[in-house]
Length: 113
Length: 111
Image (cartoon, rainbow over all chains, first blue to last red):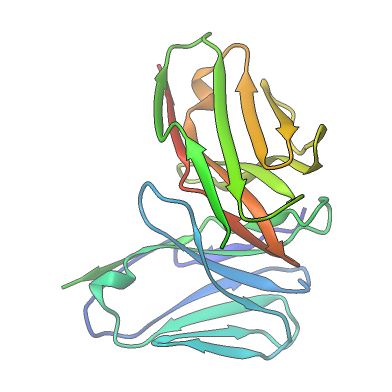
C-alpha cells in the first residue's frame, strides 16, 4: 500500500492569512484527490488532479500536483472561518482493488476570526 | 442526482453486542461501494468494498463483516463488538475513475 504523508498535522491561523498544506509520497500516483471534512460529517470532494504539474483553482483554494506526481499542495488565500476543517488527500491504492483509495491522516485547519 | 444515506447516525453499544450499520445509495445503479473506518489519529482505513450484489472483498482482517444484499445497499456487521471497534464509519461509492463520494457517517462508541 502506498503511503501519503500530510503536513502540517495541525494549523491554526488568523482570518485573512494565507496558508499552504502538503501531501507527499515516495510513490507515483495516477491522480490525487483533496477532500474537506467537518466534524461529524463525511469527507466532501474538493478536487481531483491528474496531470503532473497541474494547477486547479477553486475560488480561494489553489491545488497543485507535483511534476513527478508524488506530491500535491493546497494553498488557501485570505483564509476565512468557513475554511475550518480536516483536509484529506487521497490517491488510488495500487495494491487494492475496485478503485480503493489510500488516504493521508489529514491536516486539521482552524481559522480564527 | 446521487445521494448516499447511512444509519444510524450515532450508536452506543456494549462490548460483545452485535452490530449492523446500513448504507444505501440513490440515483445510480451497480455502484462500487466501500466501508471505511476513521479513528482518531489514524486516518481513513478501507475495510471492505463491493463491486456487485453478494460480492465482498475485505481489506483488513478483523471481527467485522460486510454484505451486499441489494444493488444499492451495503451493510456492515459484527457478531461481537470489541472496544477497538469504536470509530467513525463511512460508506462511499465511486462516482467516476478514482473519485469517491461519502455518506454522512455513523459514529460508533463501544463501552
